[in-house]
Length: 476
Image (cartoon, rainbow, N blue to C red; front, side, top):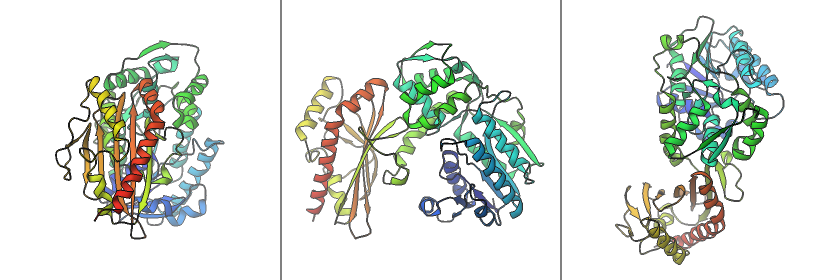
């Protein structure tokens, strides 16, 4: 990994994860970005960020100077207009610039499929062909559905299963696919650094088993303990399905139609040569789903909700991150982080919750009636906190002195819930306190619970944060 690596798409799903993997291995990375100033704060200390916009050819040649391997992980689907034409021109510009700069290899991730392809899959394969014909040795990986928390395909699957107890299932849910986990995709992309392509080479990559989208929905439901009924409707076309998808998965409405349209194509590996060339042994679809559900809790715990640039616009009920519902707010106080964090560290038990203690007691009583712990557990220590401690009907899931407290709910709710507090110093000698409520609803009942109680939660959590801010100014 001694050579310089250029990475496009570092703000995207695949590219962002690949960036972290490369940095963890000590690789020399240069990220190409349309807005370098926004990406610079998110990369490691040794990573470069330069101007490099595939839609502006003149920015590419200097950005690729001295690069050994260039990852091409950009596409324009979801930005409106003719994405195929935009991607065609961008790939041609990138290929010319890479050849001119003396890039040793290009690594590209496209899509599996043969025959009468959807516009999306046809475009992905056309981009691969353009890169292979650029004169730069190119490794093109073609993948089926990518399973990982945060991927568009997985979040679409999740939303359908979580929110619809009874689903009408069109014909395309039975189309054969070979889903691959995000971790295995990254393994292939990293392994390409040690492979010398013979001109342009295509490798088909997939998971350990062939299944249908319907199989994936059943597997996800089983993993989440949900009972779901599937009613086949043979007349529901991809276009009609996309309209239905707009209602059920609004986060991905802009690209839903293209994704659904692509599901009519079989995406299975016909040439298994990738297993012979690369030291990757992919997981099964069941393992991939299990890993996605495990990883998402870690990823959501590590998310910085103060990153406003990437945050969706909140509306009634907060903002959506995949299937998660997030209500985040902040306040600035003229105190040090230690002083600002002090009232947070005392929360619960005898101190209470700073606002609406009678409502908290009522919630605790109702929780006991349905078999939950209620408020009777209190807290172990009025000041000290350790990961694993209980605080009333919450459990401490994360704690960093004077910076972070993350509580996972153990009261009975139709889903999973977290309450997180973060404290950071600001530029004026004070501190910013951020409070974030996160809810992962389980089906319709979970959605109804969140949106029905939203006015109450908004009042309690908003008032709680203001009281914490006042308490911090009284800390000695």
